[in-house]
Each structure stands twice: as C-alpha cells, then as structure tokens.
Image: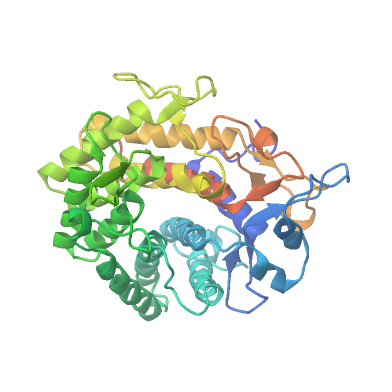
Length: 426
C-alpha cells in the first residue's frame, strides 16, 4: 500500500487519478504536432539515488532522449493505442455524467476533456501508422473500430464535431473485416493478412463490432463458429485459435487467455436472446472458476475452483507486453455483465465482485512517483503493478521502465469498477 492520495475513496476519483497518471506519464504529441496525441511505449523515471537504472535495449535509451523523432524508432503497438482511446472514452463518459463542463474534466478545467484528447489520439494513430488506419492484423483494427464507435457516441452526446471522421474510420475498417471473415475452416475471422490462422482474438471483437453496428446475422455467425470450433466445454472457456495442417486437418491452439473471453462476452450480451445470454452466464462462471488467483498472490495460476466464492480472489494477470492489457480488457466486459439485468442476480454479482476485487488490488498495490524520480507535474502520479496480486514497488521499482500496456490495464480495471458501482446491482 502506498502513501498519498488517501482521500480518493470513490471509484470515480480513483479512475480519474489513473487517467491523470497515464496521460501525464505516457501521453505526448506526435513529433510535437498540434492536434495530435499518442501514448509512449515506455516511461522511465530517474533512479531516486541517481545511479540510473539497469541498461536496456537501445530503444529504451532512445525513449529517454527528448528528440521528437526518437518516438518513431520505438516499437509501434497499434492496439495499445486503440485501448488508450477506449480508456479515454470511459473517462469522457464519466465527465459527461458530471455535466460535461470544464469543472468535470478529469485533469482540470484548463486541460482538454477526455473526449477531445481521444480524438487527438485517433489523429495521432493515423499519422504514426503511415497515414492509414489499416494494418496487417485484423484484431488490431477491430479494437480501434470498437473504440472509435464508442468515441462517436460520446461525441454525439456532447454535440462535438468528429463524427464524420470516425464514421470514415469504421467504413474503411469494416471492409477489412468483411474480407477477413470467410468460409475457410468453417467460418470465423483471420488473425492477420497471412490468412493462415483464425482465432478468438480477431473473431470476437469483429463479432462485437458487427453486433454494435446492426449486422446481427454476421455477428451471430461468428459467435456460432467460436462456439462450435473454439469453445472448450470442459472449461467453459474459449481457446485461442485454429489453423489448417499440411494434410488439411484442423489444428487447435489450446491456450486460454483472459482477454479472449471479454469480447465474446460483450458480443453475446450485445446480441442477446436466450441462447446467447445462457452462454454469457456460463462464461462468467468459468472465468470465476478458472481465471482467478488468490488476492494475496499465493497459489498463483490456480483458479477459484468449482463452487468457490470470488471472495479473496482476483482475475489473473498475464505479464508484460501485449499480455499487460489482457486482464483490463476482461474487466471492461465483465462490467457490462454486472450491469445487464437480463442475467441472473448471481451472475451479475459474480461479475461485479471480480471487477471490483481486481481493481481494488491494483489500487492498493500502486506506488506514487516521487520528486527525485520525475519531478514537476509528474510527481504524485501513480504507477500500477503489472500483476494485481503484487505491489508496484516490487514489479516496477523506482527507475524501472514501465510499459504503457500494464498501466492501461489498471486504468481499465478502475474504470470498470467505477461503471459497476454506478450501476444498480443486486
């Protein structure tokens, strides 16, 4: 448990603090261009004793230089930025609930609103991605399409410009999805333009996008393919993917990842109907049983077990890099289940407890950025752990390089908790 920020007792205040921390530490203009925003891959403060941190790859050293072109030498993680947009939309929705006035802005009345910053981020993504929103991975594009759809709805609510641009983004990306959804392997969505692998990471968010844009038949066909091909009835969870072997047979990639379950759950809820809602309830129960770990970190990797309460358990986390986003994504869609009155009270309560317990663990494990480490306006911002069951002081000690993905994960969890506690629950 860190010191400081002790007055932040509501989930809304905690989510705002996470938003301020991530945008302060990672957010910047692209090449100092006005009207742009982008999240840096890493943030690394000074070691408090002045010795410097352990040496790392050259691109980490480049990050520490103040040259605007240094950002172009860093790895480009398109889908991290898409989830950054989604997090800003979450914050913008809470600003809207506070009256959408300057006083309601997460970072103070003199700074841009979350929605305005999200719009700048979409501009930054296009410029950084070589003046296009298209890339080689259909799952990346699906996440951005979903985020811009939500941003468009936020803009509509606040009567802000930008809806025409967002619609063009989605129209462009929808053509990509239509090309990726074929009858190969019986259905589903290709993962990349190599077109040799269909998986849950691409099929589920594309299904959710189709569901939210009125293409219900397409969405249902993708969900049915997932259920027939990648659903493991013994676990109640969705496997990673399927590919053809040289002999023409289907080979399953049997890995189970937390984030894959999230957009499946979201699509099931979006489409509704008795069968889909029943699948959603099974999925929430399976997440509770198999994708949780004790909150104290003991026995990591073991689920809560059949019939075990979620009390004392949090969602498991899956490390750094892309895995640093996984648990936050699942929290986002569990929050939708927690608020969906079509589900049973028991299912909704389970989803809500998983979200709030995980968010509480992230919050309690945070550490504050000290004056020697950062200075200026970054002092007092929070670093969140990459594992909910471990303190940030252990996983990200002062002077360590902190990955954007892991900080977005905690921010997503806190936004999900704020959404859950704002909704009427059993």
